[in-house]
Length: 476
Image: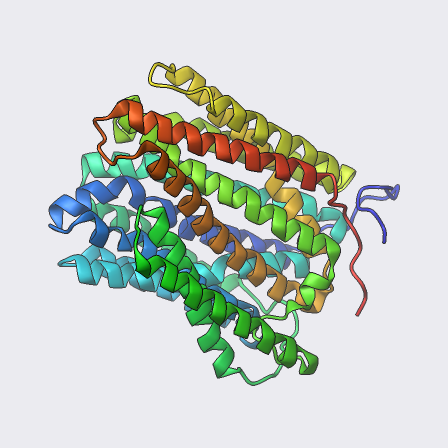
């Protein structure tokens, strides 16, 4: 194995040609739009509950339904990327997203709005794996860190500004405007992409295994549904039944893929896990995403319930952290090309862990300045972790497994997000012993327990970071 960043040629790495740069640029913009859409719903949910006259358990399906659809569709994307021409797949993804956005903007009531969100999610699920696969195929290894840094800008800034954009639009125009603002941008990106995007990689002809699709839908869908049930404070039999069904479905799905991949017919080729670096990067990415999404759920509750901030103020307070991630991403990408993943991951996981231990000191009297410092340190840590994980993990695979590796990364991130939220919210609820937002002392007790658990888990991330190394993929 050759360690990435261990040595350098005297000559500069080859530059991308104009066509390849255009493809990556269009995919980056499209991915920014669809990820931005994922995060605008959180601030809007209380408004939607009131205006659409639905209860919180019903209204949360606008988010849970989106995640559920993503979990069902993403495992199929590895197969689709290999079978469908890139331009066609891009057109389908952005057309679905645009159609769903239009349906949501025109929705006369909750059922149609939910349908629009589901259609949006079908398009969103395709975009990130398509972007990752295209980058790994088009970009030479010596330049991947820099390009992945640009992808990290998209992944970090879009979610960061989503709540702020949502708060401003809601204050000025109402909830439908959130979709009307996104629609013309998505249509413009659709037209531009259909004109500029060309085929990436070689087509592989193989029939789709329908049973694998069904197993993936049942297994991953049920897992996310069950975890989301716990994450929303649910209890009783239903989440546990869903988890059991999901685990059985995923187990059978994995066994079937192991059989099918011998003939290169797997819907999701699990031979990616034969790479030690890919396996470690996937595990560490899951841990980091679980912590990020779990803490990102708890933090606004703390700010609004304990510190009594308004939703817009909450969004503005969290904005600098996301922007910091965006500013750092190109630097981290260039450092990756020089140093490889390990040094950056140690810095990133250590900063993340330090921020979470700092959060365990929060109480009802904590100044918002301290919360801002915490979020900036957390964002710095994540900026130094995400680019190395994506680049080292996918870069350790042979080219024929790029699409499957991208789909695996995206699928496991969805599961980790749901698991992180479920774990930290469940701990918060159980420790607080009450759902009454007026009982600040009890709520703070629950949040402290969640922050403490996140801080302890972050130590595992620091330990894992020391074991990741860059490597050149096998040629076959």
